[in-house]
Image (cartoon, rainbow, N blue to C red; front, top):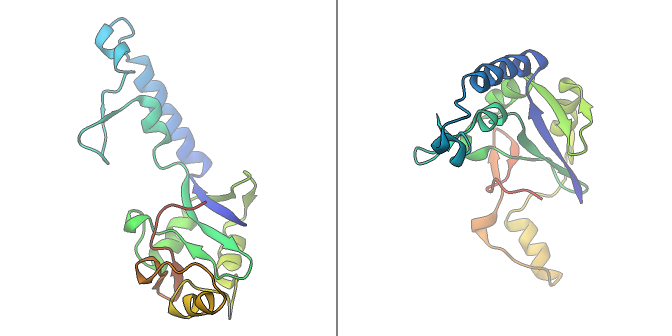
Length: 166
């Protein structure tokens, strides 16, 4: 059991998104059967050339970015989203500082307080899913996942090799 953390936009960015949403909605053709049938999905999707987005999808895109998870006994595990938003520690910290941080319960945490907590969580001897961890698991009869599932180390940070967290 642990706690997940997310980066959300600052209020100014949310207001800008809101204005863009209102502008798009005000121009919708509510009488066009093809638009209604498609859920007003007529905005180019930058992440998927085969699909379109609705104004609401566009508004929400990138508003809640999973940063990572803290769990007792483990080092903080960062989610790098396959380098979509950041690819190293410097870019990660810049990205975090450009927004706000909330936990999975919706509680806002001061950005610098979050960064300090995350960088110190599990130091110096918290677990990392690597060969050493799996050797302990093997000796204790635990499940072995193999190297394909080992954590990555990026600029000294424990980074999940997956973007899926629970």
